[in-house]
Amino acid sequence: KRLDELRVVDTKPSDTNRIFFGCWIFLRDEEGLTHNYRIVGPAEFDLSQGLLSCDPPLGIPLLGKVAGDTVYLKTPEGETEWYIDSITYD
Image 1 (cartoon, one colour):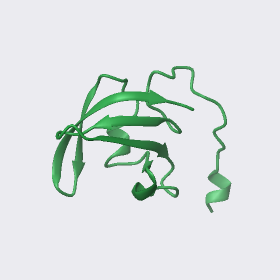
Image 2 (cartoon, one colour):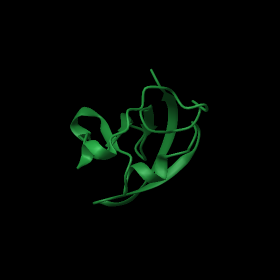
Image 3 (tube, one colour):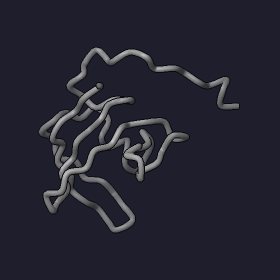
């Protein structure tokens, strides 16, 4: 079923300053610790490898944001604040 809906994304978006599918994001949490994740499809999701799903609850609030933005993400521990340090598509 998924193969019928499959879409290969092999180009960068026109605005590489914003978070979209396929980018690497570097986030700082409330304690000042840095984390990096790549925005991927839900079937590729694996936080232990730094692969963050574009779906809720974590991916959707990040999409379209830019470096310097602060986002509030809902996690099992509750709502947390994250600062977007940088975005790259390399």
